Image (cartoon, rainbow, N blue to C red; front, side, top):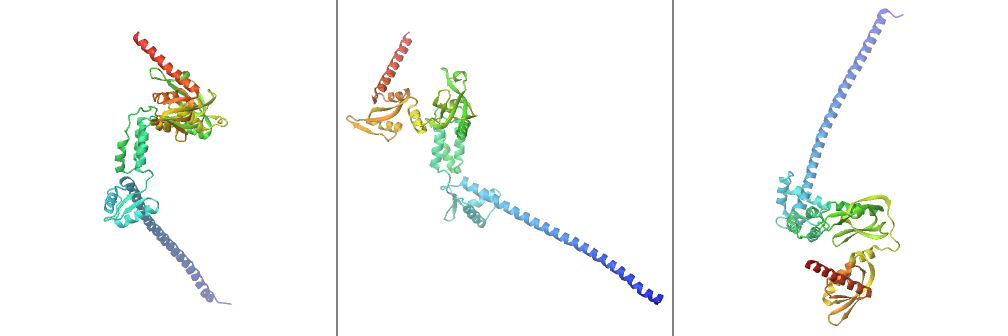
Length: 391
C-alpha cells in the first residue's frame, strides 16, 4: 500500500500540470485575440490604402473624361475646314477651361476620339493643325434650310428666328456668323399662330394612330377679323395625310360633314384634338397622289383634260405647273399646243387669266364657256363699281 508521502508526490505535479495547461491555453487565446486584432487592423489599413488608390484612379479618370468632353466641344464649335487649330492653340484652350494637357496626352486623346468615330482631321504641317471634319449638314445645306424657314409664311417670325438659331448651332462659330446674315432675307407676310407646330404634331399622331380629329375652323370678316365658321361648328375629320402646298399645311381626309375627301388648312384650325373614334378608311381606289395633283395644283373642281395654246416664251410656266411629262405640238408663229389634266375651278381660270391672253383654252368647250362667263362677270362688276363711284 503506498505511503502518504508517495501519494503526495504524485498528486502535486498533476495539479501543477493542469494549472499550467490552463494558463497556457489562456495565453494562447490571448495571443490569438491579439493576432486577430492585428490582422483586422492590417486588413483595414490595406482597404483604406486601396480605397485611397481607387479614389485617386477615379479622380484621374474623371479628369480624362472631362478633358475629352471639352476637347470634343472645342473641335465642334471652334474648328472647321477653314479654321483649324494648332497643337499649341488646343493645349492653351484646354488649360483655359481647366483641363491641362501636354502634347503626348493630346495625341492620345485625339486618337481615342477618332477611334470612337469622331471625324477629327489632321493637317500635316509645321505645326500640325486639327479640325472637325464631317458634319451632319454642309454649309450650303444649312443656308438652304435657314432661308426656307425664314421665307415660309407658315412659320411665325418668332419661330423662324428660333429655328434659324438652332440650325446655326449645327455649324462652327465662324460659319455661324456667315449663316446669321441669311436669317432675315425676306419680308413676306408671316403667320401669327404660335401653336401650329403642336397642331401639326397632333394631326400627325392621329394619322399614325388611325383616329379622327375634332376642330373648329376660322374664317375672316370684311374687317379682316378672325371668326369661327358657322358660329363655332365642330368639324370631324379622318385624316389621311398632311400636305405642304404654297407655304401652307393642309390636312387631307374624310369629312363627315361634306361626305367626301376634303382638305383643311391647318393654320386655320382652332384647337384640333385627337378623339378615340377610329378613322374612316379611305374610299376605294382613292389615291393621295392623284388627289393632291388635282386639288393642290389647280384646287378643287371637276378633273378634265384641257388643251392649251401657249406662246413659246411661256413654256417654263407650263413646266412649273404641270412638269415635263407632257406631249406638245409646235405651231407656226412661236406657239405650241399642250394637253394637261386639271380641275375646272376659279383657281385654274385665274391662272389662265394672269397671262393676258398668251395662254388660250382650246378644249373642252365647257372650259372655254366658263372662262368667258368669268370674264363677263368681272367686266360687269367693274362697271357697277364705276357707276357707284359716279353716284
